[in-house]
Image (tube, rainbow, N blue to C red; front, top):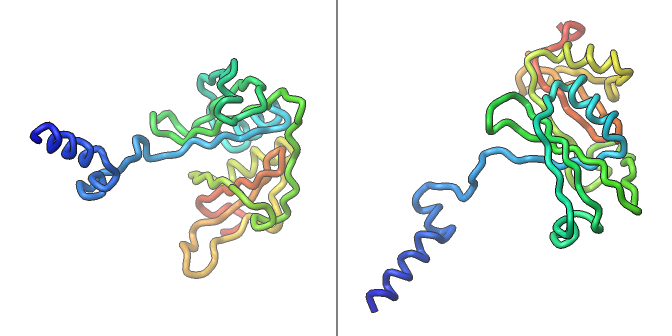
Length: 183
């Protein structure tokens, strides 16, 4: 009987219900990593590093039967390039990969964030929007639509949003202090 009570107590302590009662989270990390399949790895690395300002750290490979067994690929291996925002161990990680497979990745045609279901954009908060905009111009990347724009009424008016698209057509929001052109 005592063993049963101990077992029930241990099961309770390991349950999600107990985490919520104790004010603890089941998350071992407070940020998420985002995997991004690209059609041209070199172009994408250049965009995310030189325009946005990500830094590349040591990546990794996933080979053998694992990618297929867990549903990541049709059996093609993964060579993942890891980009980070900052040097903190909890920095956001963007994992870029170009997969060599019979089924090629295709660029998305997304004129607006609501025209394709799924993750529609990433938001990167910066100290200097003008720097990102200048870096974009050096690579021939233009601001999307009529951005940058000051945030709408009711939101901080000293902040602006610059919308860019990466080489595969994914939206990248740059949010930070107003650009010189908006002051």
